[in-house]
Length: 260
Image 1 (spheres, rainbow, N blue to C red):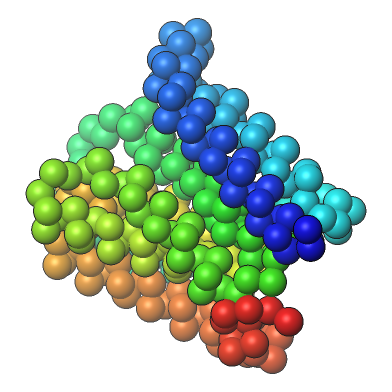
Image 2: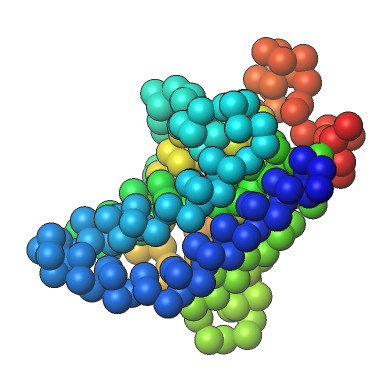
């Protein structure tokens, strides 16, 4: 078995193991950890941390084993301050726009706020961008499009619990699918610094939750105007920086479908 096929087999096998265990035990373990730690946020985050070993094993088994450290495989060796500062500036349109258009939630529920911002942003990026997309793209010859399609599809499916209405489900799927593509593209263009998509994910979710915007990921027209403005700024700045610093984008015709 060549290296690409071996790495694909390992990555999908251990993601499958993680996914099955997550579906079977996450809710039960979270309940026990919340009771043990007397805090819903800590219970949620500790349960996520306990669910990561299958992904760590999968990352460890990749060939060649000495290509990167475990920290760099998951994109955590990049600059945290860079990710935070860039994302802070780029999400200003959402915070400012929502402040003018929507009312601030007077007493947001702290645990829900932390779970849907800090915990969601950190662990979803670790699992879906760093492991599921990132390692497939970095350790195989698959290009950006085949690497991102399957991972974004799964990511979007996992957000469909937010509604039962068919039209709203379609909007949620499309929004989360495209969001996954955006975060994966940013991860790639920022030289696999996971702190960039983590910070952007957290801050975009925070803006959504601090104001009375909408009750699911699809959003309304006014909410999406400011969200799309933020996304446009993110993309524009990333493209300009890539051309100035690296002489071009990492995702290009040579890496779009299959890497040589």
